Length: 173
Image (cartoon, rainbow, N blue to C red; front, side, top):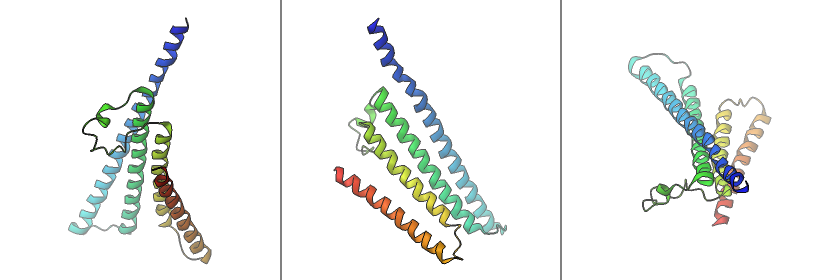
């Protein structure tokens, strides 16, 4: 009875495959949607420059779309790292990533522990927050001196977060 229960417990780890597959599907959707959005933006640019079609405030819209695409690509990367990390931690090691040709992966996607997964996800999430901050900065109006101060403080905080993240990475090595 004990052996059967332990086998059931051990095999319950395969439920993680639902998260792995869902994360891969979400990653693919985000990559495809962002790429399609960028192609649409490029098409608008071609229409504007080659055929003289009017797009009011195109530059601001283009920058906003590009920043959104970067944000989506980063989120897709989070999903990829999460899926690969869960698979490596709960199911099996990815032998292709650790094989003789592993110089191609540079061990970026090799996850050895929950701390590895957390660190990699944390760095990409920090980048998402930085991109989101700069996306919001596009819409800041400087009609009030306090807004300039807030933006400066925001940039300082983003810089500090990036600095400490970089410093923590090098402290581990």
